Length: 280
Image (cartoon, rainbow, N blue to C red; front, side):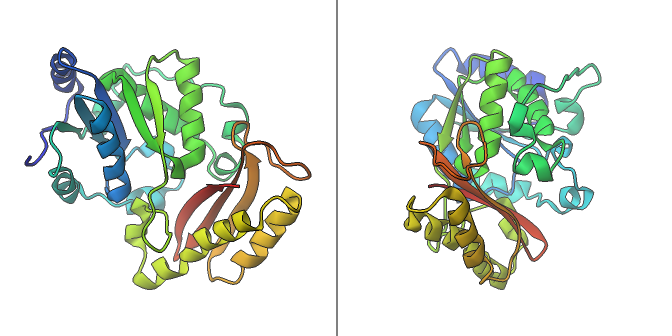
């Protein structure tokens, strides 16, 4: 155990990974830092399935369409490394912007279809192309056998799966269940910006999702969304969207249920934007 070794340049990291691959597989957990138990659960899963795990810590400027959101995003490298020190066989890649986006870097946006225009795509234009760009570059640098992502970022997961398919990456994308606190709040690095009262008020998000799930499919998706919005309005948060969509196409469900329906929600608590989702 002990503090994980930190690499800041791609060429040194690549050399270490090449040596490790002679002994076994390499798993990858990309993060923007401000680590919490949700991230650690991804690392644990990756360690169960691989010889070495690479954790990247990089606040990616290209996926923020709000300058204040980027500047306010927590940066906590020292405490991140402390959290990771409980693991063996973990190394950290903490690059500069120049290392991720070198001058000769060429990126052409990929066709994300409805994934780029629905839900998060509608409210954060350009966000997912920024995600695709950074993950593509990270995949080229790390070249892992598998990469691990949390299901809280449900739409991001769909985007990354599409990117892997379109760009022919031979990397297995593994989704892991949303990690929640004992009271149901989905863990997020943004939660660090909430007061204790805010964290309490944010529980209306998971409460609304569970309320809707418990109502079941007796009504149409549209009716259930109406009931969900009414329940959410009992709390103090500002709702951005609450929609039931098909899990694969992200098509909004209105009159008829699909086999894989999921409710996605985004809301503001103390000016902090939070997202969550739950299979219906």
